[in-house]
Length: 421
Image (cartoon, rainbow, N blue to C red; front, side):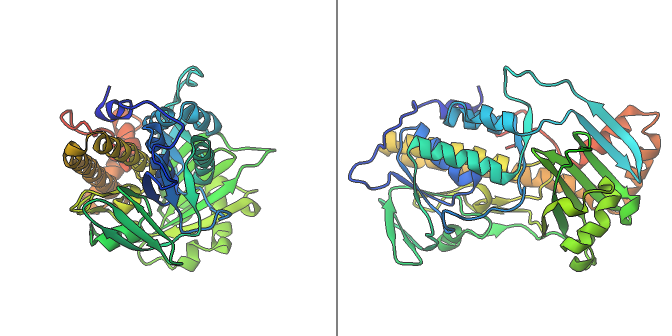
């Protein structure tokens, strides 16, 4: 059993709030997948949780966003709420084949057996809005309270509690706060904790497409180096439940209107998936990623814990963002539970959370940087890729290297218990 799993099972799951008088036990800021996971993990430790969300309850969350959920995350969710990981795993798609092409020629392909229905799948692919739907339903079943339309304006930390005030003047106080309020975290900024890391060069266009019922594409993940139909740009197609996502890597000087508008997508999409999908586009988004880690994952008084994108921002390669955020959430809840159970040992427990999860984030950031060197190659790396593509039909390892490289290393060092998330 790894360190995270051991932490998660130290306290039994309860269904009644641990606090009295209607006051929240712990506040969670943000109702994205990481915040909802943190609230579920707190309830699994018998701690009452109230989630503050800036958007209204009837918010519309478009797009697939983070769609790849690893087995480690499904297992963590299963421990937070028995049956949840299995439910999400069964709803999503597990593709059986991975293909990699270089300049239109296949250099790698591998198919995998169908996973057993008796265990969690190795991964599952579904739109983030569906993941959030499952998490929200589980939170409500577990007794998590929600305060919708509550954008945080002010955060004040004392030696005994954290006071949070929303823009409309509502006020909450709790001994601990888990900040899961995303890349533009108001909580992190209020604490004066900087994100450290550079912005990226260039941008990506992400497109969600509904699958055709009459002639669906094979359920395969397909990666193209230097796609000949897109001017040598890199593109990835990933299936999800009900459709697929296409991620196009644009160049720094590409005008957004050339690739990132719905009309532009309808022009270039047939080169990737063929005809018949131009009118099935569900969502289009452009993004520039950052590779950054918070200077600290907790405040000096150890009352606020940063998780998910409030604590780190990664390029999407390797699906490290949401998956690492779920691991953060589980570890934060375990640390808070240990601090409440043994107040005299609260600081060491919370400091360990901050130290271990920041080490994991730093590793993930470096791993994403390794992947980035393959996706935006310099002259030497590009020459290596071309040579590997030429040798792939004769040397199996060359094709495998081209397939693995865009995702970065998959494990930490043997001495690193944080592994990849």
